[in-house]
Image (cartoon, rainbow, N blue to C red; front, side):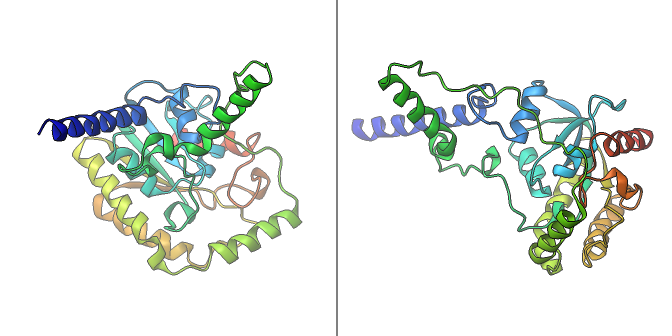
Length: 287
């Protein structure tokens, strides 16, 4: 019986320690690791409750200038972010939203098979140790430090400073844009509506959570470069999402066709020098 009790105690200690590591923001607080977009957001906003949040993928990062906005929303744009990411953050208590949530949407924000960033903490399964989950970031730190120590050098690694989310300046050339659009068409733009169901379901869960917790939730359809035709399925995907919004009385703002092509870096990312200030101004008036 004593052996069993000891084993149970050890297992519990490991589980509690791993849980503490998962939620202690160790990597977020260290400049020795390359942070993902969620960790960068946490670093800029250490407060426990984020009162107003604007969520979306990289088009939100490059469109909404938090520092210029009068609306005081946190830019929770995530590279490769989809709505299931938002729901997991809420469900697993990685974020606490205070009073308002705006969801920035486009075709890819609702696509179930869109590539993700595997370092986002909500992708960690409970049975996976934190050190193993973060092995790709821990391993180089340890091995490089050990090599330096053997060579009589300072074992402290290089600091990654400053770390900010990626935004876009200027514009891609027409040929580069054509190549980008061709790749998107092959990978993303000709998919059946069935490949959007997980994110549509997550969208409904987010709205229900917000309604239950007195959080005002609204949605914005993000701008699209008018030089290029929108994906053929985009209207069907938008209609499916808007059915959910209409059912719950969620206010929507459609900015898909609002901005001219000179405001864009590519098909959906705005130029941070001219397009993003204009988008931020329009959004502020609506908010």
